Image (cartoon, rainbow, N blue to C red):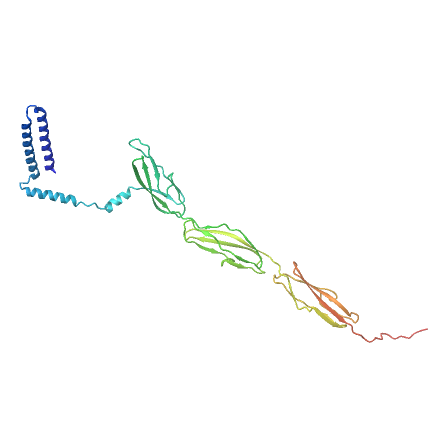
Length: 345
């Protein structure tokens, strides 16, 4: 490197001398003499250049070998990837912004231009054009956003790491309404539950809908409070609603009744119905004439004829009626001498 600089310096001095000399004395020399002097100077320059190329080395071959080695080293330079330490240092320069889930990121950028040019800038995703981003539950994580500023010719970029911290919230149970059914109907229920953090949720439902269905019967009338519990393992939510089962009265059942009864005069007739009520209601049994509520009628020899006996069973809400055709056959009896007395007059 020193030899090259010396070479350039010497040549520059000589050329300057030639120029100055030519400028001062060009009128005193003729063209032939001037050419001779130029040739002499050129030879001297060539000799000086050769000496400078040899440098401090006495052997010219060694100088050439040194020059070759210098050229070889220059050609073998390899560009490598930045070291791990350098990469970590670069990452450490990235500005970090921390927020929590469901909060809003709002970046404000201050730019300056040494030339006083008008500068515009823009944001990359997840930021919008204004540098804002409304996060939601479930967005926890790290996001790299790039801010690019330009004066119309040149641009500058800077990265910002947005760190969204997780905020756990309880599962959400969709709004519930009371269910109204009638006895004998089937109720089906499946709760709708979601988790803002997308966590797995365990859902439990209390009776009578623990298995998702409830088949009512004649004894199911009433109100049932059902509780739904949803848990993500850390937080839980609870909601309740009512199942209202309206009473549907079941008519009393009547059995052990003959539709037709035939007896003879002088005989007794007995009507004794068997009654029951699925609702467990108290029953009232009424037996019409000529039998009566006690259910027994002893006929006389003058009671022959056809009768319709009405049997009524009531649970206080509804009434069941049954008609019985009763026939009392005539029985001819011999005359009866009731009394004998002495006639007078």
